[in-house]
Length: 124
View 1 (cartoon, rainbow, N blue to C red):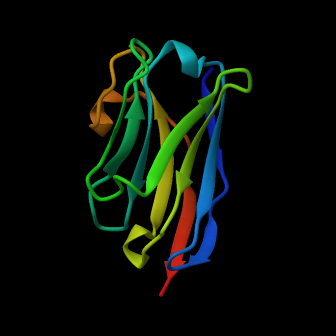
View 2: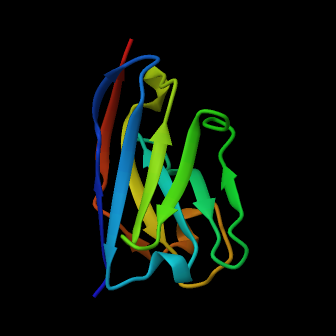
C-alpha cells in the first residue's frame, strides 16, 4: 500500500521561507515522476512542480518559478519543496503526489497517489 506523508507546513510571514517534506512508503519516488500541488478552498488544485524520473527534468508553475525549488533524497525516499520569498497568495494546503510512469506531468488527473496535505499560511 502506498503512503505519502507531507510535513513542514506552518505559518510564516511574507518574505519568509519554509521547506516541505514528503516521505513515501510502498512507492519508490526515484522510479516515477513526482510532484507538488496546492489548493485553496473553492479553487482547483494548482500544480507547483514536477520532476520526471526518466531524465530528471523539473518543471515549475509560473506562480512559483524562481522562488520554489523541488528536490529529492533517494536514500530517504523523500521529496522536498523549498519555498522562498513567500507571499500571502501562497497560502494553501500543499500536497505531494506520485505517478506510475517516469514522464513528468502537471495535471492532478495524471497522479494516482496523494498525501494528506499540509497547511501553509503566509501572513502579510
